[in-house]
Length: 112
Picture 1: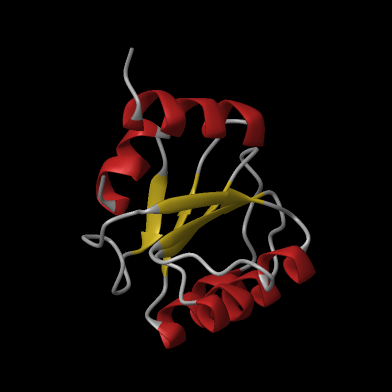
Picture 2 (picture 1 turned 60 degrees about the vertical axis):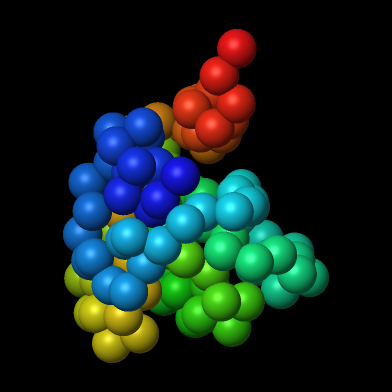
């Protein structure tokens, strides 16, 4: 699945296309603890979080994430959009809860 397809599954609004919109998503991590994200060593990772902070994008860049989806319909500060643009990081927002977002992505990647 590509980041674009994941955004569609999550009914997400893509705020910054960045470099990751057409990249393959190989692994999805859902976390609000950026220290946990830094421990992950996965290729083509997508980060799902309810944390609306510039630090999320900086952490995602460090681990080489495909992009970030902020869940729970949280409003994003304009600084977060600016940082995503500066980093060429794909940034989207979804009204789904973190749990429902995880279930939706899993169901789309592994249909019954």
